[in-house]
Image (cartoon, rainbow, N blue to C red; front, side, top):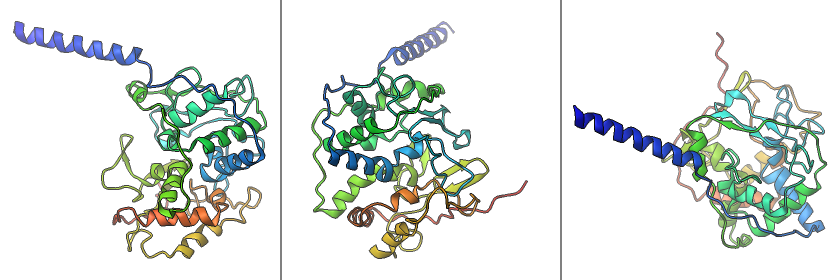
Length: 326
């Protein structure tokens, strides 16, 4: 009995020590760069393209009108920050911060290096680990030139004075995410557009495609289901499942030609917040079709080329299941 008691006490002490260590532990991080980025017209335009089309930063960091199809950003709230809907089932109160250059409620006092660190490494100005719903694990592959261009665009956003709460994560997620950030210690070269599939992989990292199109179990991608769809999203009264975008013939994109793939995106190019239809279960989506419809032909072709290289997974998905009435 004494040995059992000692064992229990030893295990309790070990658990307490581990908990204390995790509580006091700082996130994996390195000091931010001291860079001051030169704002050029080319960088501003490239940053606009990444922010508004490829990475859809506004989709997470802005208040949106969920009564309309596609949930367009509310005018004047671009990048002003918003709390994510509870129905998404995230582990706590997750808030996308105000990323406009407002000095009191946004990131107006952040240095360019601090912004780069947050985007690619997942560490806030105050040293906190950002919740990886912000896809910085993919953004760590963003080239130096692209991340600098994105920062130039962030600096040029109209400042919006809009205070939002700080993210509050549930235990033990609030401790475990400290291991999520990883410093980027070497220069990241621009992608080689001459290799469409490789370039497409780069675009997938920036677009966060894996995060939405791969089922997860407790925040971890489900083994063998990469890009096979079926991730369930609940917002308000609506539900949508992400599509299978592997090259599987019956349930994925295996039978799609490159032109059909491009046409699918181009079909949304005429959509605007003013002309958006009323949101219904049949048209509700979190896929930023309108923004992605404005990607260049080169980028859409590269995305198609990369998706043809991933492992085909047979997984039939019905994105818009009919609502089940009570």
